[in-house]
Length: 168
Image (cartoon, rainbow, N blue to C red; front, top):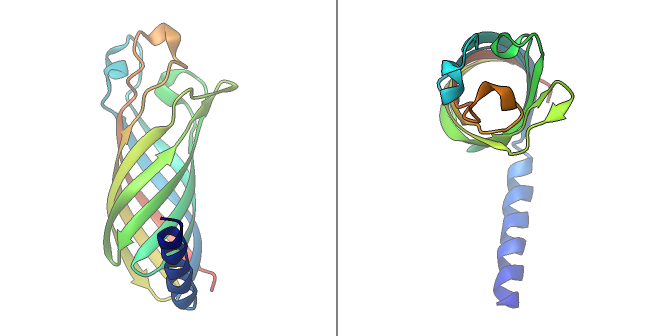
C-alpha cells in the first residue's frame, strides 16, 4: 500500500512538472448577478437578487483551471450589510468548461458556520492576452448566520462575466 501511494504521488509530481511549463496565470475582475432560490427568499423584506463585484485569480494547467475568487455583495438581502464570499474552484475544459467549488461567507462580523459548495459551467473566450469568462453557478449554501430570517437555506444561482488579463 505504501509503495502504491509513493508511486501515485511520484506520477502526479512528474505530470505536474511536465504540465507546469504550459501553465498560465491570469488576474481579473467582473460582475455577478445573484438570485437567491433557497427558502430564505420567502422571509419578509428579504431582497433575493443583487449585483456583485468579483475579483479573480486563475492558474491554468490544461485541461485544468484552478481559480480563487472573492465576491463582494454590497447590501445582501436588503440587510444593509456587506457580504464577502471567498471561494475556490477546480475547473475542467478549455473554452467550454465546468467544475466544482467551495467557499464561505463573512457578514456582519461573523463567518458562516458551514462552507458552501458550488457547481459552475461557463465559456472562457480567449482574446489574446485578455479573456472573457461568462459563467453560471449554483451554490448550495446553508448557515445559521441569519437566525432571525427563519431559514438557513441560502441556495443561489449566479450569472457572471469576468475579464482576466494574462500575467505570464
